[in-house]
Image (cartoon, rainbow, N blue to C red; front, side, top):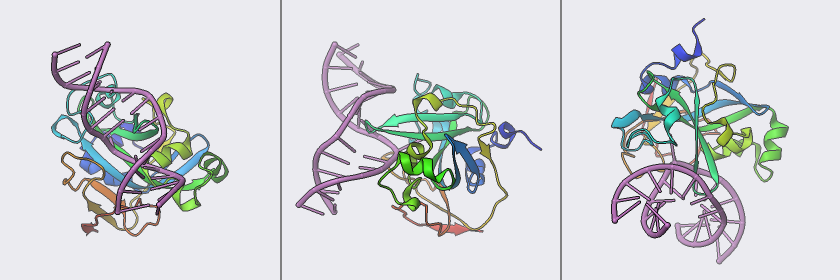
Length: 190
DNA sequence: GTGGGGATTTACT
DNA sequence: GTAAATCCCCACA
């Protein structure tokens, strides 16, 4: 039974698709991850780590298996799983998920949302799971459970970036209804 | 110390 | 479809 850290220590492009289908628990809510995006360290112009270590992104430079949360657009939190060897500053943005337990809590936190949209989007998911500033650096042991691969995985360009948006580093479970819209579908694998 | 921009969401027309 | 909400971070002076 490998440690979570070992499972996440590989290159981010290998780890990212393996997070699809994984169980993630926080704040009394359990989700199944359906959509992710890879950010590959200093070489990636779209990454927060591109300009080197700063107070905001220091968690990315730490060991894999921790949560990197950041605040954006004046009101939203988003969360990433830090991957790769320590110091590589790679991470996987959790873009969408399906709530599979703790529905009542998730509905309370997102009152005007349909069940399908509770965690359909990176900031929506954090809201539904009560993830924010205090979860930055959280050790994911006991929170994240990888599952054996099931179903088809699609890949395509990342969303919302100005820089290097063309890299096909977004991965999602093909045809899953909780994948966020804005899907510029590209190609399917497996 | 200041200013520009952001890995988004929601409501409104 | 378009716009408003809203604040933190970072680069530069």
